[in-house]
Amino acid sequence: MHRHRTLITGLLLILLILTGCAKKSSAPGAIEQYLKAKVASDENKLVSLSCKAWEAQAIQDAATFKSVSAEIKNIACQEKGQDGKYTLVTCDGTLVIQYRGETPREQPLSGTTYRAVKEDGEWKMCGQQ
Image (cartoon, rainbow, N blue to C red; front, side, top):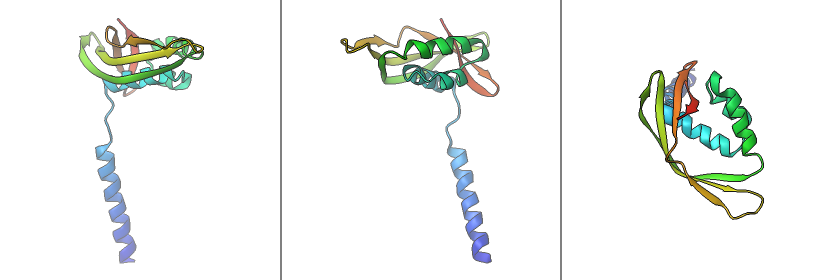
């Protein structure tokens, strides 16, 4: 009996440690996840990563990438300030898009500023500038 109690206590301690190490949600992390889901054309994930006001655009973003092969290389997003209730995020990296066997086109991610907002306790994509 003592052995079972010790085992259960040990497992609970490990669980608490792992929970404490879990990555916290962030504005740059939400934008990075959104962009990855966008190139994967994952409509459900895009909507779940969007603020309520951006959900319709998220559905369009998923549709846009359905007929192309796309990937993001070397993505790194960071906070760049505030705009009212929004946290501004910029990303470095390259979007590579290939449509029906054509030569892949590369587009730098820098140059776009994304808006993130905390909604329902989670960071969400909520527009671009």
